[in-house]
Length: 313
Image (cartoon, rainbow, N blue to C red; front, top):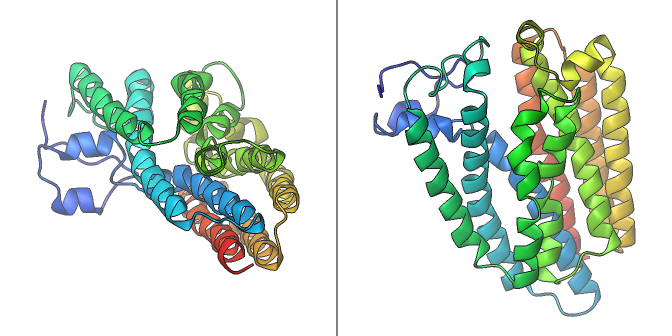
């Protein structure tokens, strides 16, 4: 293993390169610690769910704010650990493909910075960290969380099989939209599944934008993606995907009995998604990355409305 190889093309000028010990950098890159946007996007549906479940408790007259804060913190730790594990697993399976794609050929495995055995050991350590977090949750939430493992395991293979692997990513990445309900109130009402469905379509939309960075390389190596499938019609698809996202999350808020703060948060979230549709240029890789990353802000905007509703509504 070497540590002198450059950082991946889509990962430069970050805290890992500036501050992490050189021997740790390849492993931190393998876990995408140099690009925390993925952890944010995995975590945000968890926090949406916690906020909505807390709101349900508040309307029943018994909000458990301390438990909500504790679960929010656990989900944050778990999101970092499991996002890192998912990226490591993805890179293990995709190491040959990554070596043929410009943006990813300098990732740790294809660049020879980490051995395959080392990657498996690192994967196990991250899964162990996730297990520790999992065991801190109530039994029902543990069962719900474990139900997602199949999706996590098969997602990296989907780009070889189906034209919209982003859908499977959405199913896996949005699981947190169920977890706050499962942990805080011990059940999954209809509003939880509506929130989950909305989050799934949100993921499909923003990951389509992300995938346009690799559209030409994916075509050359035979990898399927929604970016290739939608191609020049992407903007229209985004209107449909993001529009359905807003409708489904709106239904979730309505079924959960949400009030004015939640609706204001949803309206601001919808406005941000509209800005993305207007702003995105699918032929400009830098633009696609910038618009994709802005989804952290979009998700936090909605979260602010849901939290305000739970605490002040």
